[in-house]
Length: 310
Image (tube, rainbow, N blue to C red; front, top):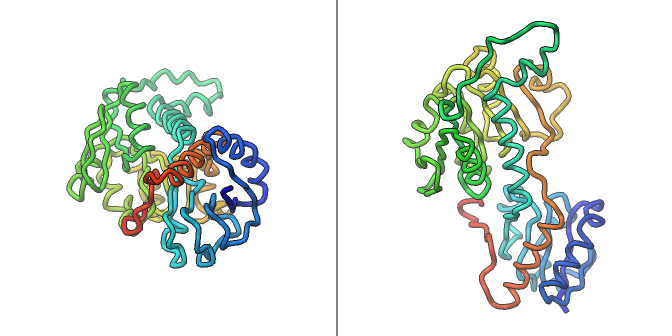
């Protein structure tokens, strides 16, 4: 019998207990799932950063820490975490991100706000968007989420450039990498979507210099991580007209404080970190598969590289 500790906020237990138990049974695993296993007797930890476990040192026999979140920036530098850490790559989460990103890219591409918000008796027939092929879109970060979003947009006819820090090849996308590739990816882009992990290298990647590379009147869409954007630089670019609109789902501090300038800015849309949420039913299958692999002596899926931070 394996002891699996569930460490997340209390209300998550009700959502995850049944899907995890079902997934373990279907994977042929005999598991005692609980929120209070003794550390020395815990085989695996199902982990969320908002749960009670902060010190991993007592978990001397734990074989892996399995994250319920795609992002691991809040735990990857924890000095007590010596066990393998696996981030969540979940098809349900990916599909949610694809739908959110596609919806907001189409919203800006089609100029939908002018008609949705402008129900005032004025016939605005001068608003006619180009075809998707004439609208350059750049995706910063072409891991699992970025690649899926980029391919979905390419399937709609958009000219999509994907950028990553190391070389990648994603069918349907023009792929660039490195510092020089970043400038080329941003130059003249009309819509930019940020889906990079949060690391020291990606912090403020959209700063004043890089925002200036975008086409005048470009739109910024950030469902990745708040610190990817230099907030002061973005606000200045919005006020100058260099950036026409920013749709932001993630922020340096969450919930976004009520007095933050983003709330009142007419060219900013704030969404409350809902672009991609973990779905218990699909996430449970990923957790169960990783435990099955661990017990079978196979490599874990999606192990975090501590030096890279993801």
